[in-house]
Image 1 (cartoon, one colour):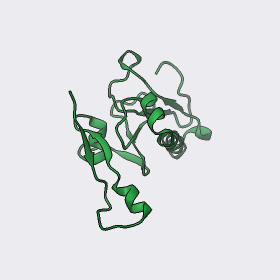
Image 2 (cartoon, rainbow, N blue to C red):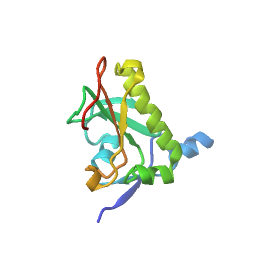
Image 3 (tube, rainbow, N blue to C red):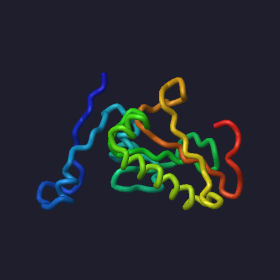
Image 4 (cartoon, rainbow, N blue to C red):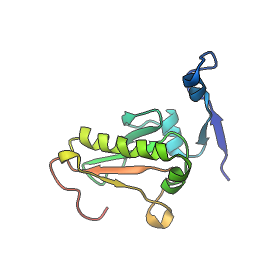
Length: 144
């Protein structure tokens, strides 16, 4: 059984106003989740983009010339759970994926954004994440 922690993001208790209240909102984190640990900075990763709600980093076993994972800062087991609980975060994840592909040289911003949901579908880390796959100047065809 895993334990979910509540952590307080930077900003501290001395800030005031709506932005400070939002910053102090607890963030769900699962202590044994590698993506939660990457988001927290406890596990190194090659970060390529970051927003208030998502983090993007290079995949350790790339399947395309550009292969980046985009994960929500808050723990959700899969994309279906993320969509139900925080659709605005899912929208940010998709937008960040598109920006990563374009910034990575994808021709006309063309890319694949893949979500595996469940073990039988190939999900190996149970923290929602999108795989951004692109081949700058080429094609990301074939089986991925």
